[in-house]
Image (tube, rainbow, N blue to C red; front, top):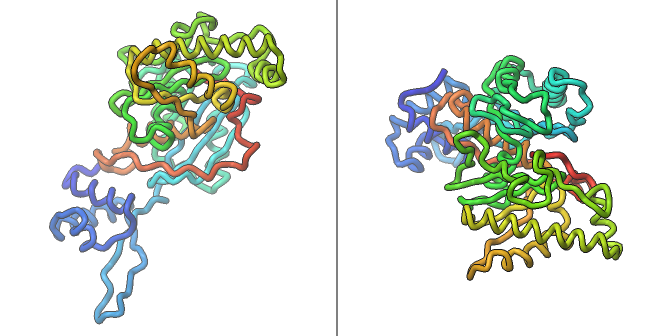
Amino acid sequence: MVVTSPLSIVARSALQLRDAGPATVNDLSRSLEISRTSVENAVTVLADSGLIVDAPVHNGGGAGRPARRYSFHAAAGTVVGVDIGVASVRVVLADLAGLVIAQRSYSGVAEQPDGASKLAAVIDDVRRTLSAVSIPASKVRAVGVSLPGIVDDAGRVTTSVVIPEWSGIDIGSQLRHAFGCPVAVDNGVRLAAVAEHHLGVAQLVDDVIYLSVGNRIAMGLILGGRPRRGIHNAAGDIGRLAFRGLNTETGQISWRTAPTAAEVFTLARGGDTAAQQELDGFIDELAHGIATLTMTVDPAMIVIGGGLSAAHEQLLDPLRAALPGHLGLPFQVPIAEARLGAEAAAHGAVVHAFHRHAAEIYGIEDMPAPPITPLPHEPAGTDDTTVENIEEKQ
């Protein structure tokens, strides 16, 4: 049931309980500066919908019964974020307050022989994650999906050079049928940008260029605080055009002195002159491409994600030094390392689901997405986002 009246007061009451913690009717009335009667009506609606429950009362020691307190029922439902890649599939489960309650990583879809098998494997990964924490599928209120490719607003993959079997396939519809709930699908790099803007290094920054630099170079844009999709949903699919020397069809980075980026970086660290020269040339071309994008968009921040972002002294530091020479401007644009690493797109998928399907998740049309609280970082040495373990992204 979608609540329609009194919508704004119901949403404000729910938001206050969700983000500020348990409160009495009088507490809500004071905080929201609305009448006690309006709050009582909103609380009744929220209790009937299962979004709030009784909280432990505070006994102030005075005479009479303590006032009844309410808390947001975050465990009433689950929102799923899934990031689909050829190297790995990552699944994140969040409660209705945005607290991440489970996070799992599985083998990528490259191991599956065809498009149907790839999709079946993803569905199984989500179900295994739910089962591992004893959450029934009936509690899933929405699913957000990140995948490599251009995706239209309905969840159909227009084209994907990474998973070509899914080009033209309505992945959103397939997953809606599998889980019986709304599904929001978007490009993985765009959703990584969403995550860095919502809970990562670019919080409170409304104009952001996010570059994923790994096996490919791809971009996500946040403009005016919103992800930019474009009329054809292709905004940001510019890596193979803006950065010279990449494969013009796939955006793939090719290396001369070694087969992989990890080997080139290792050789350069060991003093190999040819590898260092290749790395210097790559960084200069990267700075040239970033300068072109910067002059087009004029962002407040550039965020570097993807596997190569972990190479601080070998990539980010010289990139910061090289960019001003290509820009030639009297101001500097900060370059920041992505905070969420390989988990960014999965968390961005959770945010995307909350944004797109608030009415179905909460039963309230104008409920904003919650602040997402990720699980604590894994100990050093276990993070997938390293030069030695670059994941395919686009």
